[in-house]
Image (cartoon, rainbow, N blue to C red; front, side):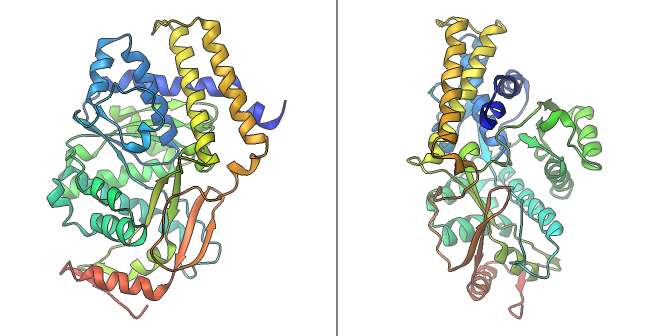
Length: 408
């Protein structure tokens, strides 16, 4: 059996599908109006969850009613075949926040503690996330939030539509979260940061019910993250969904549907940005959906259809849905998509999972000194230091409590 045929064999794919189903079955029972997706790894799972909800909604009124309340972002709608969701009229909104902190400076950024930068980055995005529990008018006053919308999205990436979408995102009262876990460091840090902000900002709705999809059946979890996540789940604030292999994790945009970009120059310069007496580190980065007319999108669309086919097969086998197709037809449909995916990866495009290529529509507005991709497929963009100084100098003029030293 060839490598990719073994990796994308029936058993791990069906486990992947089951995790999507289990979360879909539970979501309507939870009290939330904002659903946070903080990692690229969770994005393809969420699409699977949406497709599971769609199938369940065809047979069960309570799921149909829930689906009408769920507003899907544009990046998700591309891969969902149904229109039976909120369409902007529901009261449950999905929030995509680029918590990506898989940094690999490779000597390009000197004199920094990379591990601290990773934690600082997740703290920054937790600050940004907390603003969605405020009204649109209030959140624009926060420098963490406005640096993301005005500097990263508008100034650097020329993405006015996305900036407006975040600025006008409906106020959230109660958060839920879906995340994928390898060692547990990212999720435990995010939950800790959100918990601290619950206390500091008096925002109890910020602490989410967390659906945690765990790789290698939990065998890769490391201390102290393992203990922290166990405490969180066993206290009733989340659930583990353990599978043998998260097939799409850290495999790049072709299996995640999102390209991740980080800006190390901005991160380093922000160490000299002060909010009153505290450092205001900027975990500068963003996500961008893959280009629609690209091999990355073709692979991801096929992968999404494959997981959806696995979901439909499992739901039918478990007696949770009826259907016009027989079990044999559903299994055949699953195998067709599986063969297509393996073919796309191995026949001429086998580097699509390991090569960055041109898979984003981001048009960067600042000078690029260097661009490279880390082993976890995060694009690192190094900018001109003088331009970043100018960016910060103009930014702090809007906030009397901000100071920036231009001597570094």
